[in-house]
Length: 168
Image (cartoon, rainbow, N blue to C red):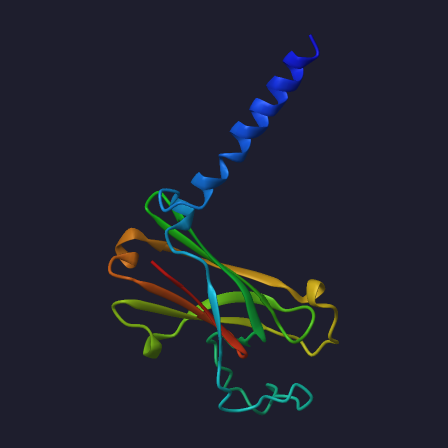
């Protein structure tokens, strides 16, 4: 009588452990783009966060209405999730300051072509103190339709210190 529950337990454990092979196969649509790979970025100009940027004043009314965010410090994760009709590109990054807001993936037109999409991970970052890495992490996502993904082989998301790319 004791052997029956033990044999059922062992059999169910064997069945559950075999599920791991489907998770890592190419048949799983979550694996279609593969894992993201990190590469370093060459910094062309160093931005010192201690030097304040020019602010708008009463005498200077030429305020640009375009997005004023700048690249976050580092991209730590890139996921491309297939959905009916397209895909969601999700990136997790760490800005250099705490309290970043209006986080976006901004398409870089001069680095994108017919086979590669390049996004810059940008955010508006207040002049605040630096907290722990966990308290500074931000997430941004962008939706792409199947028509926009047609012919795309590589998706890149770049920050100031690194670039994560995922290939089909």
